[in-house]
Length: 79
Image (tube, rainbow, N blue to C red; front, side, top):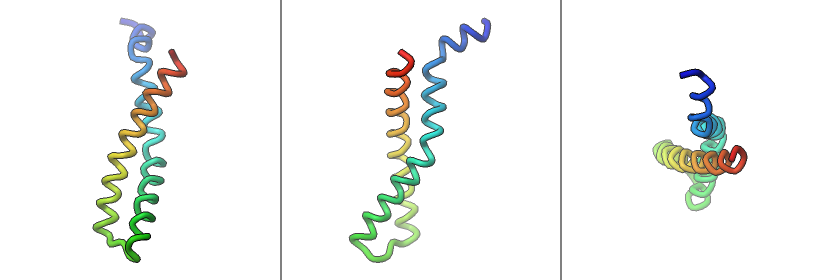
């Protein structure tokens, strides 16, 4: 099996993973900041434990959002 046939077979998943990983950290940070600001409107102080919980929630949300967006984008651009 040569490299060209391997690349053609796995072209889309490679690009989806690359784009998802490039978008993950900035999107996670942005979502986390929005979660913390929303929590600060209802409370004056947000504890560190609450920030950790919100960071976990932002991680899960950004992972799903980045993978779905990357998949749709790669299908629209490359196909």
